[in-house]
Image (cartoon, rainbow, N blue to C red; front, side, top):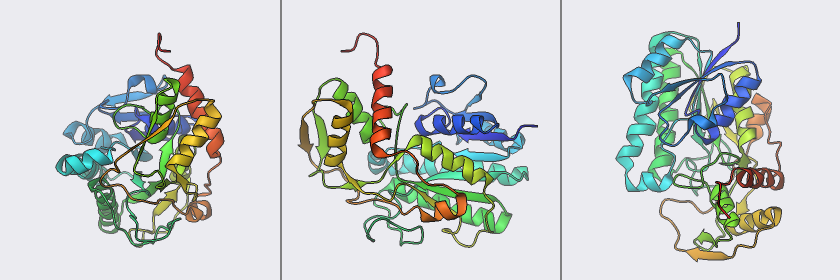
Length: 321
């Protein structure tokens, strides 16, 4: 009998890669998604979609009654700027929705592994020199990062008091095919969209701020490895947390230059004021994931950027120059 996985947010950008990775590993996959940012088109055939909000009683019933082997929780409010503008909404979705699923899992009594998509870019802040270890001091610079870290502490409670099997994957900046270049988008997707239109690339601030860019396929593989890993009992919030990144800092101006090089584009660079709630430098040390999960990034930045740009070109809307 096939093992069963439930992917919340599975119709979204990262979630759709996670869905495919579990399918390729032989899992029967179900998806829980309200389609607020994800789409049915992101899902392969044969995946059961529960079109529900993670905050709803109906979503809790799917978790409580499903007896899944693994629950990968990716559904979230993902826009840092939106969290700054409306922290209460961010909290309702990212904390309230996560608690709804955790409590349903507790009530189910099933031996499900709960894998939470946390953030390595937003929980550490600027207190320590990158690349940042999991045990580094936490200083979220936004409500989004604060909410993600709060969920990790709730997971620690559910593990300690109720015996839940929990893992937190702290992602660096994820990019790749199917990322939406509009709305809640990452810089790589936005730049790809602008390059295709020969439009200027907007750099917020001076462009020297750095991020750790990790390919979506590598992130999806981390979820599958985390589902299978033999791990020691939880012993504090960081014990079951794993950074998922490349440990390499890349500046925004450098990223733009490298993307222009692999795409052959000719967009110019323009500057705009720095955005509130964003840190200056970010990269995560991923040695623990290699030691305990058997994971390390396999896709280089150049290869990942080329794959991503080629996907955007292949999926360019009809009639667009």
